[in-house]
Length: 606
Image (cartoon, rainbow, N blue to C red; front, side, top):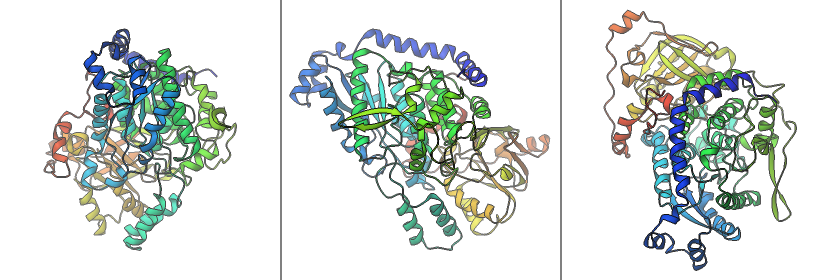
């Protein structure tokens, strides 16, 4: 199928916009490739340090210049999504030896969980943890003793951080291997209902905890379609996974087989020099990731992470690209919070193989990208299975097995994708509409202004928000306080909406990838710390949020607005490690550029 003209146009303008920065990046990668494998340049003392602790057989292989895989792992045994990585290195090492090479754990990265830190001070470190992960990935690989890399990561900031760090070593072939989702627990609908009941004081904390524990109950990622599972969708469509890797449960024979296959493929690519990471991650693969995000109703957090990942490869994307791609990409999936199904049900209905085939046939994906599978994206219309004592791939589902969860392009849930650009005199932001009912996509109501989540919660509990209202929560951007997720606002806002009030959220902060049916203008930039319009909103000002037409307007006379002094920023908070991240807050870029500290591209380049 010929590529859709809008997808072709967006890709072409990204390539043109990125011409200089991409060339600079590729020049660096080309120089590294021409220098040859790093171990060739290590002195005898350097090399002896690098293999001192490995078994004798591995020492002989490394000395003999056999391919050596550097493993970067986000293992910890507190977090369900990362606990399965404990045993992966031994599996990878065993497979590497059988494939004529070796593997070593090059280093580890932190892996914090937004589910644990929601509404807590630690959430102010969350977005910046992505950049810490990128830095720690670079530290791990900078020993320069590796011919390929295997990245073990799954959740929200971990995968984008691994991508950013690994792209500095784009001359190496690098494969990503996740842990997969936990088996299904109680339904997401039931869990959400208990949360709302608790917000209303109708159930006890013990009842709430029982519901949460029945939902988050074993190893693996959370089963809703938030940022973690959106990560895995993107890694698939970017060609950084082996086909069908995304949504296989942990601790199953197929999951172990995929880990072994990834290790064997790393050795093959190290020997051949093919599919190195700078080839895999280009403008086309970034566009494919955005298309997948829109088609599946994925997390709004990737309006931050994808620009940051792209920038690390010298590619410049912005929210206009997201919006234009969304306008021609149909919504094909309904997975909680955009529906009632969980990610395991999505996978059973046809999953990524079905989605990839449908989007390719519609001309919405670039099928000719370089992938770690060694073929174009067509290989990702297949799914893995155990054939006797080996892993094999076969064609995935040709039709959806449950059209309440997954639909073809010919009969989508909606004609447009899940995320839209909002802009107006309040600035630019994004909104996820895939789970917002059509009659709630336009809100015209007076503002109630807050400087923190705590202030909002106090007003809600006091009954001061029982009305049509646009809650404005400001000073939540990267430079203000690290841009924490504001998911703790979702249950009370849902309560207000269920009472029949017309409510919305406007913020320069983030909402969770799991946020649902409340219209929310998020990532608003410029933020309140930049002497912007959002810093001048006052209680009672009329705000229009119109997702159907992409409007975000403060209905205040411009001269009146200009005469108002901007709100004073709240005092800087300390404790829980926040003081250590002051340099990150000082360096952070705008939300549309990813909100991170790696301002690799000049403002003029944007």
